[in-house]
Image 1: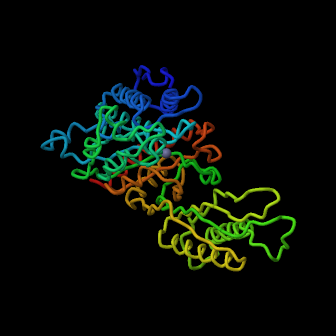
Image 2: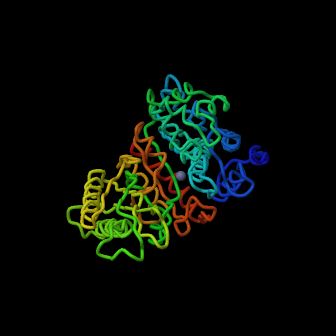
Image 3: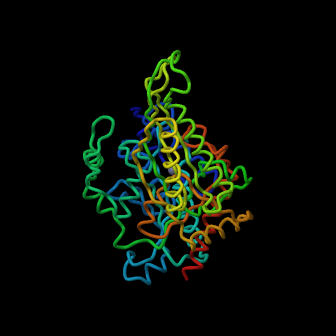
Length: 445
Ligand SMILES: [Zn+2]
C-alpha cells in the first residue's frame, strides 16, 4: 500500500466548472492503494482519504458534509428560507444527487467519481446562486458518494447504497476480503460497525428522489453522436454456470459420427444465444417487444483440454439481461430448451445452475422528464437509452424514485485506465444536471 495514496490532498477552492470537476477527478485518481493504476476499495485508508478530499470541496463551497454509518460521504445545501419555514431541517424535503467513490482494480478515473463531483458542483452552483439573491429551490439538495458500488473488496456489490435503502444484511458482516478480514472487522477498523451501517437507512425519512450522473460505459451515445442521454431503466441480469457433458475420446481413432463432442455442442448453443439476442434487438421477434435484451457467453473451459483429445466436457457461463424481467426469462427458457435439444441430438447431457439474479429497475417517469428537460436546456435533443450495467440507483430504487443521466465516454471504454470524457461533454452534463434539478423543482412546486 502506498502511503502517498492515502493522504488527502489539501483542497481550498470549490468545484464550479467542468474544468474544476475534471481536475478533481485527477486529484481523486491519485488516491490509490497501488502506485500504478487506480485501486480504491471499501473501508480502506484510500476510501477515508477520498471521503476527506470530497468533504474538502464541499467545505470550500461553504457546504455541510458528514460520513454516514456505512462510510458513505454526504454533503448538503438547504435553502435558508426552507429552514425558517420548517420546524426542523429534517422536515425539509430533499433531492439526492450521487454516485460512488470506490473503484474496480486498475480503474478509470470517471466511473462513479465524475457523478459525485458533478453533484458537488451542482450544490455549489445552487448555494452561490442563493447567496447572490437569485431564485432558490423548494427542497434541499444532498450529494452522496457511496463507499462501495463495485464490490471490489468483499464481492458483494452496492453495499453503500443498500445501506441507505435500509437493505443492509447482518450476514454480510461475515464475508471476508482476500486477506481474510471480515466486513464486520473492516467496518470496526474504519470506526464504524454493522449496527452503524444498518442505521444508515433513510427509510424513516426518504428523499423525494435520487438523480445519478454516470458515464455510459458503453458505445451507444458516441455512435449516436450525442453527449448526453436519459436512462430509462437498469437491466435485470441473470447469470448461470452451464455444463455440456459428452465423452472424451481419441482424436485420431473416433469416427466423426460416433463422437459426443462437448465443445461442438457448446459452440452450437453459443451461436444460438447470439442469434436470439440479435433477432430481439433487430425487432425480428414480434413476441419480444423489449429490444434491450443482451446475452453473453463469457467463459468456456474444456475438459480435458488437450490437442489430441475430443472435449468431453464444456463449462460455460451465460449472462442475460433486459429491462423487462418477464421477457428476459422467456428468452432464457428458450435458450435452455435449445441447449437440451442440442445436447440430446448429440448424445450429451446438459445442466446449469443460476449464480446471480437481479430484477430490472425502471427509472421514474417524472425524473426522466426532468432529465430530458435538462438535456434539452443544453441544446441537445433528448435521447433515451437503457443501462445494461448495474448502478447505485438500483439499490436506491428501494428507497425513492430514481433517475439517471448518462454522458458519453470515449469508445464506450470503462473499468479500464483508458476511460475518457471530454471537457465539453462534462460541461454539458453539469448544465443538464442543474437544469434537471430546476425541472424537478418546477414539478415539485
Ligand atoms: Zn459506476
